[in-house]
Image (tube, rainbow, N blue to C red):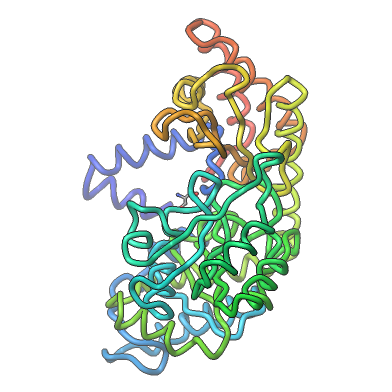
Length: 414
Ligand code: DSN
């Protein structure tokens, strides 16, 4: 792409680092389920001249002149987001998923209000009330989680907890949970408890658009999502909500938390939403899940344990406790053969977060590259061989060559 030549002319150091990163992305099997590969169209919108413009405010209500085209692109993003998710209102300005969540809490809660969120250790997210995060420090969060018997969400316990603590809001959604979330049931629990329901669908938003996963609407009052995971757009966040919360949400984002929105990123969000409205996107989401199930099943057949026994979505957690290996060892050794995963706590983990019992893996990126079930058989083989050959550097080098061969068949950004 032209912009790359320009970087080379102006700043050789950054150009070299960028080249190395493109080479890395080309040559690894990226299994981190929160990552993806964006299209050239999304990349170009991110690198567009909209980055030059200040546009505090919202379409047709700006604090600076010269925003006639910014207004058009932001309104397009808003309309497309509303349509995709069947939402009454959309705010496309949050810079990230965390800031989207923070804006929702700022808009609808007061400090020390009682909230329920899925515990990080059971698959939730830092911003769903973890004690080291602003969420857990500002609000009185109580964690709910999964059942020890099958590692699926304990909805009965959530209902009991809601009756007991009478929260102002229940936050649902997860970062490391491989089963379908029953938004309808959570909606009923919220209704019974008389509290707000917020669904953070950052991981599964692509699946929700493709109707492979239940939609949080009409049950949820507010829905947040990042735009760069299964949605395959630029790095950023959005908030969707019922009309009655629109004014509070918009005020919380601007002027409450942010100044000038990143209109180049908003333009890229608009492009991603357009791409997500196409039949090919639905096919793509179906393939993500087909690949995820295939990869999980192949690993199960090789004797590995998957948390909850399998997956309904784009990711799963490999429980390494049965082979007495730590997640850090697995992550480090898979790194050596160009397979990228992240170590992850599993529910009821007896190990520590820096070296937990699990690794998390998913298929959005390798599916974007065009890999299908046939390739999942190979990916499972490479993972298994790696975990069986820890310390055998010669064998690991051979596996790395095989991984690189596979990656070559599925090039990115030619
Ligand atoms: N960091 C994201 C993930 O990997 O799931 C969540 O914010």
